[in-house]
Every structure is written in structure tokens, then in C-alpha cells.
Image 1 (cartoon, rainbow, N blue to C red):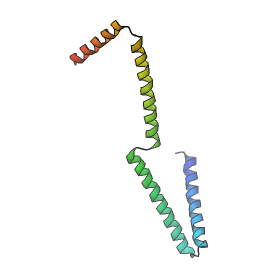
Image 2: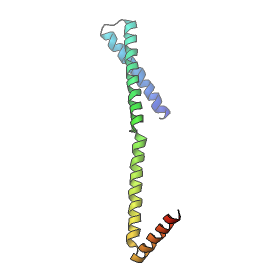
Image 3: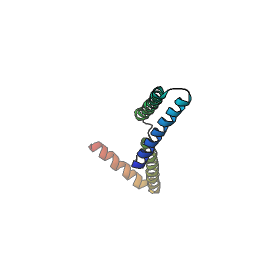
Image 4: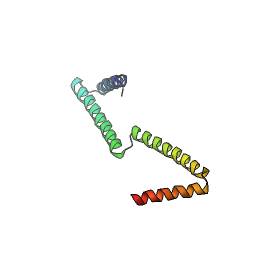
Length: 109
């Protein structure tokens, strides 16, 4: 997260607190109870936001992980396609030789 985003998020939280305080004042709360109610509301929102973040972390549904899965699948599809094209372009004798080479390497391991 960039500094600008952190600054914007801080201003948003400050504005939400002010709006909550004003809203509770309009509902008839006195100064102190309105402040406490607005602060309590912000704490509840913060705990909910942190809980949703932790849920995404533990289930692996974060943006980076999803992006990584998509890139990995695209890479595998591309490389599998290239390998299949090379295999299709080989003659039957070259394929047999390749299979024999792979079998001999597996036996040596």
C-alpha cells in the first residue's frame, strides 16, 4: 500500500468518526456518549475488517495468490502447448529414441 493510500485511508477513518459523532449528536446523544458511541462503531468496523482480512489470508483468497494461480496456469498451458507441438513435429523414430532415453535415465536413478 502506498503512502498516499494510507493517508487517504486515515482521512476516511477520521471522516467516518466525525460523521458518526455528528449522527449520534443528531439522534440526541450528549457530547461524551456521542463520542463513545462513534468510537465504538469505528472499533467494531475495524475488528470486522481485520477479521475479513484474516479470513482471506487463511483461505488463500488474497489478490496476490489469485493472480499467481492465474499466471501459473497460463504459463503451464503455454509450455504444455509448446512441448506438444515439438512432440508432434518429431518423426516416429525420434519419438522412440526419446522414450528410450527417458526410460534409461529413470532406470539409472
